Length: 165
Image (cartoon, rainbow, N blue to C red; front, side, top):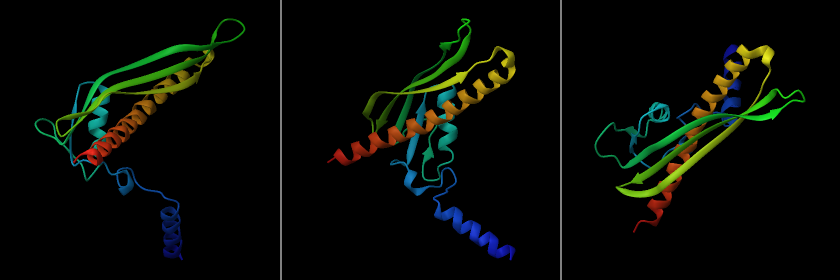
């Protein structure tokens, strides 16, 4: 009975489209070697995330088929709304990443930018929990921006490959 339940659960999960991160063949990137140029958290996150792809080799230095250069990243926290007594009731968190992509020594994306926003409701009576929520939102934005950069880099590389003679 237990084997039958496990089999049914496995079939149900595979039927709904569930895949482990980095194992989805549809998300395969159109290059086999990649180098991430740049310092900072975004570059480190890109390198870590690319480690989950089995079909892409991350090159630390030297020649790579594709190079993603992290040009800059900014994080800001701005007042989004105030209540009737003039106290902050909501913040707007913004995470912005600028990058460029080269493929086979040709610049295929001179300057790309990904910008993510999250709204954070604020309560002065729960500062510690709101700070923890803010940290979680920032981590989520940093994770999401990595996936968006790789998708965009993959798209411009595919376009460059299809336009190549």
